[in-house]
Image (cartoon, rainbow over all chains, first blue to last red; front, side):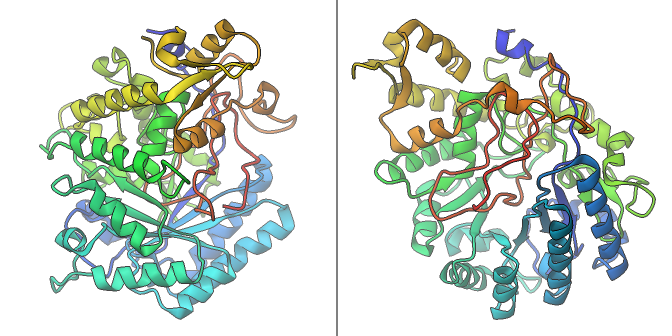
Length: 390
Length: 98
């Protein structure tokens, strides 16, 4: 183990510092790769968050902020499709958060992750009025997006989603796009599409898969995406592709801005429509009921979830890496990959990522390229290439 | 060659003398380097009275964000982000406005 590794053996604790709030458990479209409906227990939950749960959630948020002296508590409204909750509920929730901000001084930035199909002027007014940021699920151009993101009738949703994205951009609402990588297509097609929509901030996520599956290789796609990122930002920075900047940051700074890259405990929690609180919702990829707890907002404070066995198990799994990972030179940068991608029915999370070989190739390529672009600048103006500086 | 962590680069800069900096000839990488500068240690400590378990010899948890949303929204210009520096610490004062 390197000196860097030894410093990361244990981690201290912090209060819950962000919330994923499921305001709707159903969706209005039928994406073939959705992790959410892999777990049929979502159908046991109310379709929408009730006013009673919303009010209790706001009480717990204020209590949590006050108890821990938080300067802010970011909230992501999520689903299913969160816009099914209705624009009035969004207004009421945001107004509740704004009142908490007035009383406590803590910021509560709200973002929403939507498939975009329902976005109209009333929604744009709502996002604008409450300074909400919007992540729109958009898999690049139509011929890629419509492979997976279809209606229940089987028709593509791209036209509606692209229209929503352009409306958000035109209203200067802070919009990001969330894509899922389809390695069968060149990454440049995604980059060109988002540039044409005026979206400069996006992510192209690794497709979800467990160790029990055999997903298509992704290294070539992401190495190409890194090349495209380098090209797009060669002059004035024009494209921020989150997975690329996160990987660079993880490699250089041993830090993990977003889960899925870097070696850090994943301390996320999910508030469900009925007020129950669960560990990271994406762990549903492991099957029915795996994230269910008896913890709920009516009987427990938000931070109590940290004592919940399944929450603890998920956190521990995120930092207890497999033997192969612990011996890997990219352990700190990679962190074993995205937690759900480490799951298998036989070993639980005690596996390298199903994408281990790809991740290794991606980090190796990135390191080589970064080395060629870094230099030591001396006060006299002399530049020493990094390779020569050692 | 060792992995190019900031820690390695810091050692490298010591070898190169006072005032040396690691930079990139690529604007995008340079922008990220700017965002990665470690927080001063003092900033990484908990404030008095905070109910946090922060042990000096134990790395503290940094916020890692949900992948399926953008907790910190974009902004006008690329590359400014609410990044947590490798010094650790619970970030109570993210730069807002993006």
